[in-house]
Length: 86
Image (cartoon, rainbow, N blue to C red; front, top):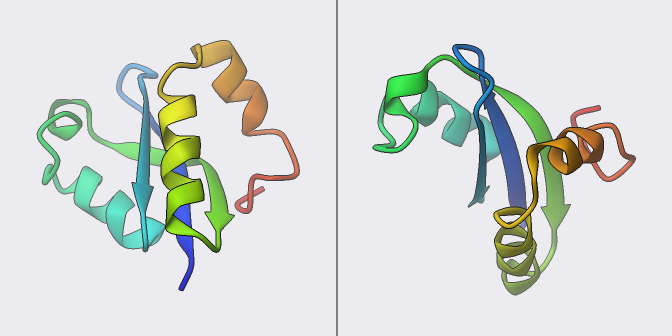
């Protein structure tokens, strides 16, 4: 099973949201349907970055690291080879 860390961007105001999931396509749909309390007021969202991990713990560690990063770094990260949606 694969685990994913993702960054989505609000098309409304450019806000970035970082998360962890086992299915990033389904999770994006949930965000866009307003099913997440934090992101429901800033729809629509688009995927900016997705990184795949084989080990759940590694993905959770990466998510925690990303939550401490500034938006300039996160936007730069989206251009890197680790981004599987690039």
